[in-house]
Length: 450
Image (cartoon, rainbow, N blue to C red; front, top):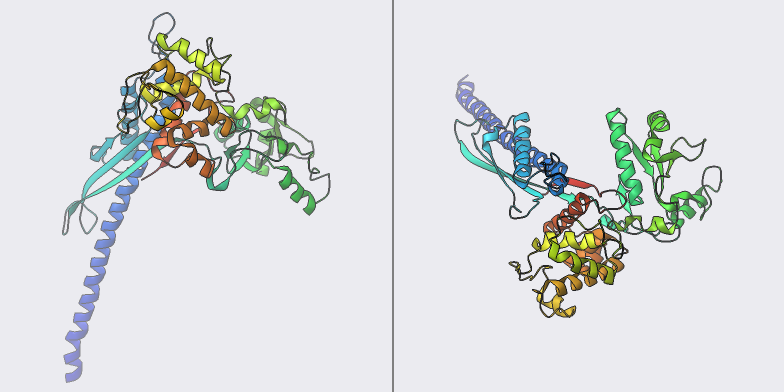
């Protein structure tokens, strides 16, 4: 009895210690959960702001006035563009139980005409129990960054940027990880959006297949009723999509034609070919992916964007014709590089209207980068060479102009540098706003980067 009486306080002490530790664990867990909620709210606010920027981007480049001089309701000024992003972030915070007043929103590219990156910082007091008061309460800060970036998956994770090996030999665009001709990708985007609105989710099971891939399929199942012999499949043309699931077949049969797709064979409810563009496996089809086409000799008329100052129109058209590069592409670059300021100097030392670094200027015989006519001609020559090097891909040529051709060649993609991705996205948006993109506008995606 004495021994049990002596042991009881020890047992009670251990029990109290266990309960105390459990309470401490719950409190710490509550604090961690609260911080996780805070980070989630910041992430969603940043993503919502970036989505607003992506959706509004083209409106920045719409003329501010209509031909008669009246205000253009489609135009969005830069201040309104950023205010709408802020409002989207605040609304997302409110929907996720985060006080919008806690948001500290900034735009790392605030000096740019079209910022594409947003940073959200949130400070809040969190105690051990997860609330703002109580023991251990302290101010905690979380940060989230999101950006708008071109959804050019070509080259990412080893995926090829260009089709090779017979059939289609142009640029590849990727949807759901599957390669296809860029105009097919743009049409699929429109069709998939309509399907979503009708409650149907389209899945791409197969798209472009090289002759080598077709040979492997044929070897595994040499039955022409189900697998086309190598060299005959339309999949090699980048225009064909095998779609699913089976529940979508009825919607596709009734609606695919509205988006330029036809069901190729009566016995394949999943196989749709794109017929609203150039013929499959044609020279014209190979050029679809060049974006702003290399049409220097033809781009000198109404195709030159309206944002080009009068004094630079003739030099742009002359350089475009000389080097067979789109005048609209050159103009969009100059707008993004210097806003047509011949005396611009960047913190990194880039000079002039086309922002040449001294070594690059010397390599292209540009003695005075502040001479706008000479600089525009050197810019056109460089872009012509980059377009040729990267198979006519405007996205990759622009990335190489900004980051260097070595960085692009290493991955056959837009390198994962925030500055380069923003540069490419900004110029593509300028071209889209000017109506100077062929094959439909390249999609822009929103992603969390920090």
